[in-house]
Image (cartoon, rainbow, N blue to C red; front, side):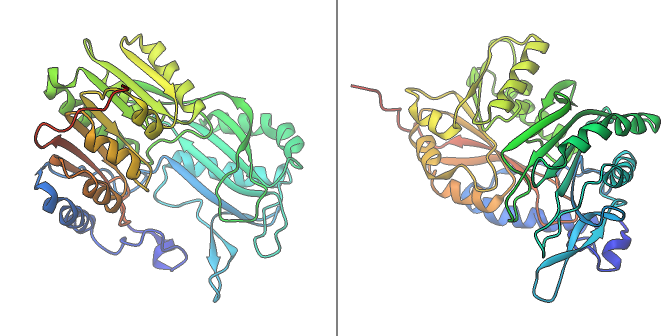
Length: 394
């Protein structure tokens, strides 16, 4: 993939861009195999490789510059490593033409609604970030990250004209919101959200509608995420009677749980975010699936309280991994299988070191983040030996 921003050293976020894509994938595979093969030498399926460009479904743009001439992209670093001057990346090749068009309209909207870009060195201004998420249908979610409520009246006033302008060029915003992040620190968003238009963005994956609310997590690469879910379903279906009960911990909006739902199988999804659970339940209701339940709980805390374990436990944790408590519980549980989806193989390897009874039997690298060192890996783990039973009260 050619990128004039990379060539001009304006943006080096795609740190592996100088390497051919095939070499990038080979390097990632070598990295993950060095971590996992010593644990159990699993069967490695061919890597999942998607498009090299226009694959990102979410644009996270820092807003800088001025009201009259805003930049949407990143902040250039000065000699001291402090971000200040904005670098405009509206035409970044990682995004689709539809997202490019939306960013152009949003840059104009900053001027129309007089949304003053936040200036990091002086700590002045209101608009910090613009977050745009694209669904496979082409529908969009747009979030304005603001320092305060000062510009909310203007945003509301001019929003109908923005929605109309988007429709004129074939764009449809299903959900628009303002997120409030008042602190001067490197945090993308705050805790408070004001929904201005719509309710959810429907992300259809493998024919399953997943409903994203403003703070919902979804993988950044829809094409590769779809293959991740299909592979998980294939492996679990092969287990048949060995996976009659499945727990999906860190279930988010229900991606794994809804893909694994099947006649005769009980699936429980657990997620700490109430909004994500609302979305997951809505998707399950729409599909009319039986045997699927979603709970709003801390996934690790919920699991360690149970007096039994599912046949198969799915974990899809954040980059920090599942942590000591859940790893210890899995080590001493009666579960027979674990399906671990990891975006950080280093913490995956650390977690496996805490679970010596488990061995990876199948694994697959998914190139979720081309042109960077990051990737996703899906691993099917089987307990080695009978394992300990769960302790019960009394």
